[in-house]
Image (tube, rainbow, N blue to C red; front, top):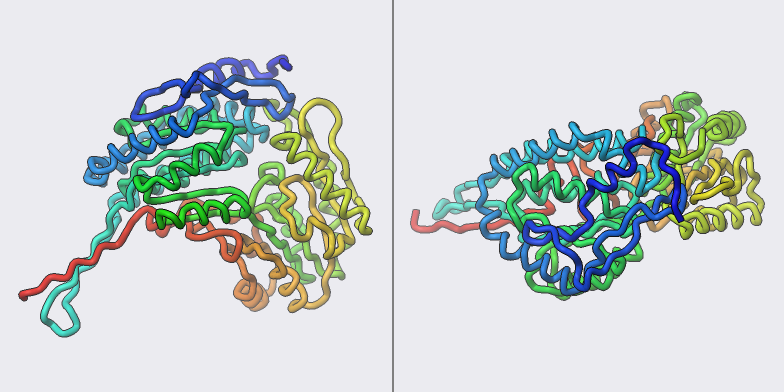
Length: 492
């Protein structure tokens, strides 16, 4: 299928993006020159084809990372930071083209894509500054007979796996600390959105990153190319963002080599609105927490718990805002809601809504797919969603807001925590004591108190329970790529 471009630079930005594997600083074809198609989810049309790596290609990439590790580990921290800083500046200077490329392969509207490019670049700026702040310690032994020297060293070659929903930011959030810490890496972007990562890798080469420090493997067979690398003793670190089901498999595979593992997995974010909340602020926060990235975010509000006294007013206001959103192909500036990533995701959202309605939920607005080409679903608000509905326990990953009421604070907390996930929560209240009390009771790694967006490169991002291990971003983000070495000094 083909489509008529509606943005004058569509063909230019797609053509400019690399399509090959990056191994040891060289762009090269996959074994047998195999390729796979990259699709525009707004039309179903093929944008281009990129290299489809084999397991042998993946092991060659790991070999390149391993060969480059020793030199990169001793590379001056200031110079590592300067490379990231230069890459940051290049990304910002090319924001328009990078945003358009992302919109074409992922579907999010251009304004959101621009926002992600800026957000992604900030990870490079943040970790450029952290590269020179890797500390250690020197202390007198408690008995006075010796000294303790503690240093931090790069863990070694890292395997990085990124998802399709934030194809640039999830890359910089992993690559930034790896480079700053002195780790080489192999990164595998999602099959649906390889172009943003390939463009990012080319920018890092332009910024002066030495050959082999970052290697990129694109593939239609994620498990087939990743498992051999995970089980290879040359790998020392795995960082993955994706589903909890895949995360569990990766933990099992990583056990063989006892890899240092960090995982950012699924979410089932509760959004609590108390009766003393600023209603307009709560609706604004709900729109941010629900509709960022078309709802395709692990941080998206998945379950709305609203006090019974204000539930009608809240649902009416939210439905009014949701129904006013403009749906379409994201390359137009006036579009606010783009397509879901593919037919599989569209079918999942459709099934979840049908299940809730069959169990008694009422559709206030939306409730069906949007007509025409592409994978569009109408922004939807449901009320009276029963606890037994599938969407109460499964990530929706789409523009659907299911609302349930509560009357008691403890009941609201219990409902919010009634999930295996623990990534992020949101709550709206004007009572400071309640806000702090509920924040402490919520079993999540992050909380948005009277705000609908929590992500920030300068803050630690991550969850508890089945939502993952470790943190990305903030001062602790670089720790995932460092090991601690203790030296005992005697004879003093």
